[in-house]
Length: 106
Image (cartoon, rainbow, N blue to C red; front, side, top):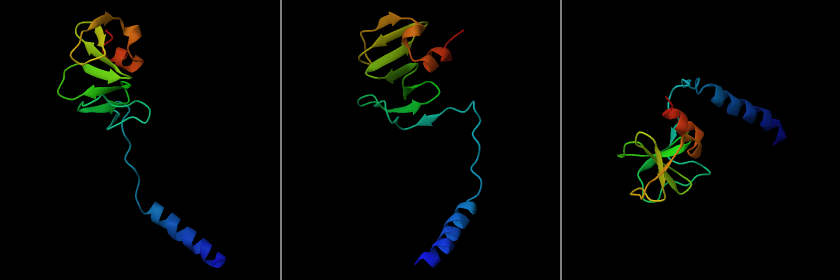
């Protein structure tokens, strides 16, 4: 059995090298995923995780985001709420995830 191990490794490595080169992703491309390994998605929300912003983006809602039981909304300034329908409380950029705050910095 040990004499077949080198051949098995060659076959395995050879198969890896035949797979081609993975395409590179430009740094400016959004980092989207369905879910994040640490942050749970919003309850009942149709969303995706945006790694560049560091939040879930709620699909079908303009400027509405979610992370760690908090919704963030941009409406000519930052607001937060524990429910996507409010009530909304004003806040500043220092209270939102850093990537999200940079998205709207002027």
